[in-house]
Length: 251
Ligand code: SF4
Ligand code: SF4
Image 1: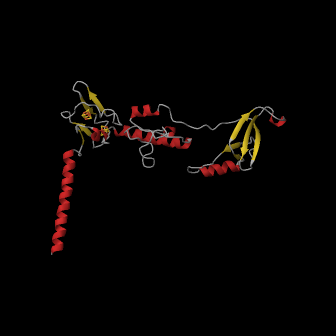
Image 2: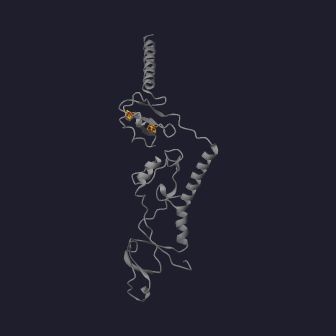
Image 3: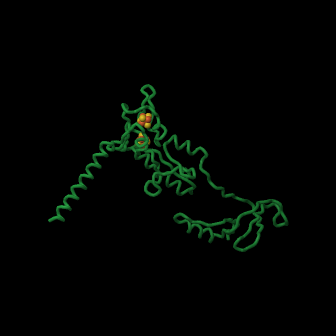
């Protein structure tokens, strides 16, 4: 038992999800923290006896002991839930990053690239991704700082080789593509009434290519002519192999 204070922890379900969390749980048990399984119904200062006078009283159903308990304490610390920012989606649009269904910003890959986002040079760490403890947040902050430093030291930014471009002769100026780019790479040139794709921002995702009704946008190495040539090549190869098999079966 702790010599200075008696600590109660009221919980419904205990999860020790991350590395070394179970060891931490065992340690606080050994140090004398009292875990009470049950939902706190009320915190009140209405004392019923001498022992409760001047204290805050926790009214709780201890579901393991199967009884109601009143526990007088000096201080109550509430463990509140975390919510994403209400304007996370708008902030995400500004930086070209997406949000999960819950409203937290999403990383590029939870295991392989956990602090990067789909927008080059934008990193998210700690509680921007969801509820996270201090050691994980600090580790992610250090990782993101190292990635930024690496970019600064390189002095040059390597861009994705696949880019979308607008054939301005074909562009009808319908603006359908303008709001679709997750990286805000498309703008509209009012003077010429055509769309323009900033090659430094385009990540080559292909969304605008598929959406353009005029077929005015194509990706580097993925023009209609190139894809049709690839299909023709494959079909020709298939025909040749079929002919060889047929010849062999006849001999
Ligand atoms: S969707 Fe196609 S035609 Fe319409 S503005 Fe964009 S590039 Fe031009
Ligand atoms: S391919 Fe189109 S939608 Fe995708 S990043 Fe490039 S400009 Fe944006």
